[in-house]
Image 1 (cartoon, rainbow, N blue to C red):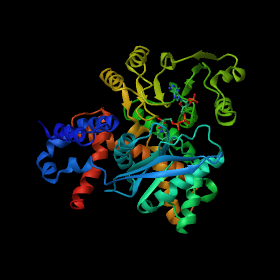
Image 2 (image 1 turned 30 degrees about the horizontal axis):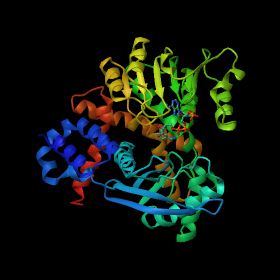
Image 3 (image 1 turned 90 degrees about the horizontal axis):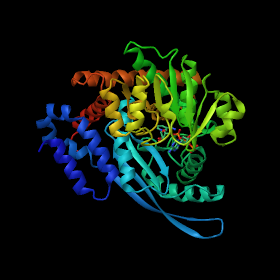
Length: 444
Ligand code: NDP
């Protein structure tokens, strides 16, 4: 049995009942076979793979809090500090009832390689709780966040571990946690990112993932002899990533003709009206059914189906596993030549393989949506400098980071005879930097 298979087997045996973690390790390690085979003796001697799949630390803690009726509740908090070979642990805090240790470990493991790809000095971590923020009052959210950070503060710090937002953790939650951290420690420091602009947040963070996705796509097309200008684009979702992906696509001269939410999708042959979409989603927090009121010539369709719209470029920006094999076949049949993931894992494995086998340029989320965490790292830099950069300054840095990410993974894929396979390229490029840093720092 090869080294990769041995380590996958070990992970399954040592971490029972963590299927998401097994899946993530399997996906990453399998795409690293070429690198591992080329360095097998060295890596085995150093137990490099065994060390990279084992988190540095897993913190699990009690989060008691009181609801508005005086009832006490107890949730479980987690922080997995996975790997700090190239910088302080960095990764979001997910607040969702589905959260368990295996999910946090899967996300933390993936985060190591995504963060490495940004080229910035950030290690991998992830955390969260099985607390459900839906339907909670502001006071209850404050009670939970205060209790959560009152325990977590012991393990984080601006040079040690810098958590951020994720599902269920937005600017409000980050604000409450930052306030309590400051109160306990007395330190005004960049210990959390995703902060409000008046107390250390960064301009462009809101736009970063969507803008970054388009900067990546622009470069990928350019290097494959194509131009994004004049192309027809379909975006799924209509949340934070989707909205700013649509905005940047329009700025680059493409036309986005469809987008979706969890109920249905709209088709607007003249191009999605971004001002209308923002008003519906960001201001009124309404459904896409409203879109027709702003654009009478558009069409609204219930259910899935956004991938049936003919396009040159598809950008899944909603949720995991939203683009399956059937969708991939439809896209190819309709002449789509590029798919780039704005969301985390939106394309199923079979769909990814089908797209790649049919010559579609496929950009994995690990690389294509890394603009969000990259801009969080820029927030850390600004906090350390005690300066705030202008919108243009941050945006220019974001663009350069996304261009570098593309070339980094393009080069890695070429070095290992997998030219054009950006999935393999992303995993190899992310891994190599971390592996080299780990081996240079002795055994830990
Ligand atoms: P939002 O919650 O702002 O938006 C999610 C969008 O997806 C909403 O329009 C939502 O519709 C839609 N959606 C959810 N489930 C489905 C579904 N089953 N079918 C169709 N549409 C669906 O999230 P974000 O935009 O922030 O995140 C989107 C994805 O990008 C996630 O995978 C996230 O992990 C990833 N990501 C986000 C980053 C960021 O900076 N925000 C950074 C990196 C990755 P509805 O309104 O009906 O719920």
